[in-house]
Structures are given as structure tokens and as C-alpha cells.
Image 1 (cartoon, rainbow, N blue to C red):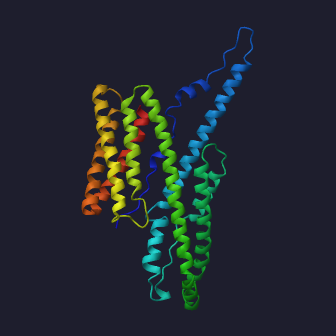
Image 2: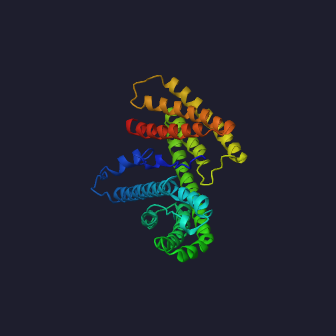
Length: 325
């Protein structure tokens, strides 16, 4: 069975690209006019600083949202793993004595972090916030029933209570599936927000003629979209529609890889400290495509594991490239 996987790790990098001019301007003193008056300039500077502060807060919130998503979608300790244990072992248990009740690790703490981030007032993140609200509601409902049932299962010698708890399992199953659906919507909202940021970076890179970074951003965007196709607790490994969409994304990713290689060749110089990272990103993304085709054609678990490892490397090299650029 393919493991679900978090695809938003690169959000953890603080996003400043495309904002450098604004950062520099906001840090400079306002020039004064000949008569010493600088009210208009100072007013513009204040507005600029406010806009920059709001953008930084929104980026921080997106990063926090992505961290919450990564935590909850974790295959071993998050919602998908607990759900699979519940469906495969608990629902099929022949006797209450055979039930080892699962819980989502630190669900209460994760929801608290999500609520804390949701409370931050930001602009332009209404869809993200709505998805967060839905996830909070579904998560708290699941948490309440988990805590209630866990108390039953701690009384290992009282089979009548364990049997009674087992009667509540259909309710808990609904809770899990509602939480997983909310998590999926939340993840999609985070990915959409990340894409908007990526497109903003690409516009900046294109306007300055930095096509290496433009096409590298494309590679990241399409790679994340491809990995997101498998980010499903029910594992869409044998669903044809998954691979139809995957084929579409792979075609775009392949074009982005070729365009980035051409841009690197045209740039010529290898003196840039980030050059090696851009090459590695391209090579690993190409490897992801090869592994994807093995997954598609042979349903290969080994190939999917290869996709995960190469994606991890792509993210690491991307973050390193931003530091070195």
C-alpha cells in the first residue's frame, strides 16, 4: 500500500523573494523636502511598512497552516494511519478483548496550534481560513469522541463497557471520514495559496530575465501538484483518474525541466553559488517522472518510495538555492 505523504514542506522557508525592493525601501528613512517637510513621504513609508508587515504575517500564517497539515497527514502518527488502523483492525475485531484503540497523536495540541494561527487577522486568506474552520470543527468532534472512547478502553477487564464502546464505532468512523475530508480540503487550499505565491515569484523572475529561477519555480510547482495526487488516506493507487491527471502534470513538469536546462545553458556561468542546487532540482525532478511512470504502469511500491525520497531532496535543494541565490 502506498503511504500518504505531506507535500508542503517547502512552505517552511520564509518567503521574501519578489519583495526585496519593498524591504529595502521600508528600511530607508523618508527623504525630506527643501522646507524640511516630509509628511507625504513619511505617510507613504508608513503605508508601505504596513503592507509589508501584513504580507509577512500572511506568509507566516501560511507556513503555520502547512505545518499543521503536514502533522495531521503524517502517515504513521496522523489521521491517515489512525484511520487505517481503525478500519482494518478495530471494525473487524471479533471480540472487544482484541481491540487496541488508536488515537491521532497530539491531536489536541495540533488543533490548538491551528486555532492560534486562525486567530491571526490577515488579508486575502479567506478561503484558507474557511478551510481551517472546517478542519477545526471536524477535528474537535473527532477528538471529543476519541477521548470519550479511550476512557472505556482503559478499563481492560470490563468487557461490557468495551462492548458498549464498540457500538459507538459507526459514529467514530463518520468522525474520521469527516476529518479526513476537511483535511483534504485544507491541504488543497494550502496548495492553491502556495501556487499563487509561486506565480508571483515567476512574474518577478520573468520581468528581470531570470529564467533559471523562473523555470525552477515551475518545476517546484508541478512537482508538488504531482505528489499531492497521492496524498490521500484511502490511497488512490488504482484509480485511473489519478494517473490521467498525473500524466497531464508530468507533461508540464517535463517541459519545465527542459526549459530550465536550456536556461541554465544559456546563462553559461557556473559561478553562481546556487547553480549546483538548480541542477540537482532538475535531475531529481526528472527522476520523479521516471518513478511516477513505474508507479503508473506497474503499481510499484518501490518506485513510489523513490518518488518520496527524490521529492524530499528537491525540497531541500530548493530551500538551499534560495539561501545561496
